[in-house]
Image (cartoon, rainbow over all chains, first blue to last red):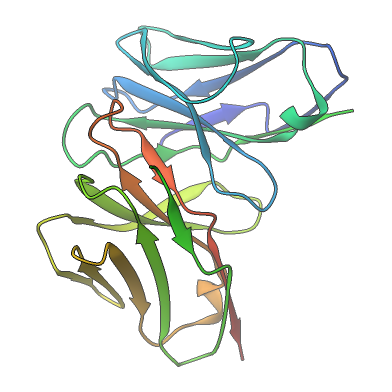
Length: 113
Length: 112
């Protein structure tokens, strides 16, 4: 039990649509990061938020965007969905500093048809 | 460059020891992690090691770090069927807002 919850657990969208994935972090964890994990791959870093501002980004286009809220929840938004966006999207929270241990949610599995 | 490499598959018998290996390229990495992912589940931190350590032991888990060769290993003693999962090695990059760089994962199969 990591204290990180994600919703929805599964969803299906069609190409061109938009999707919002949600994450609720542990209280006091002021850093949240999002990862994309395609089938058979390791997680790929999308971006990280600290105190409601983006402070790191991986090699993902601008149609991937996010928000972090004061109540330790966050969102990942993806516009103009493409077939290759089908993946497990993982949210992870951590305390800034320290060992950098990430506490992961169970993920949201997105299928784009 | 950023690259973490692992062998993709490992098969062991129940009760044997498992050794999962990982190599990384960023010599400035501060922490190295081992995560476990069971089918359909998220990632669970197993253990981590700070870069100035050579070894860390935690119950059945032993992590060895060879910083000169940039080689990390995870040994699981007395492997059980419940240890069957994918094991990911990750390094923490101090430069790029401390994001984690991940390997592709090693799928461990434990045979009765």
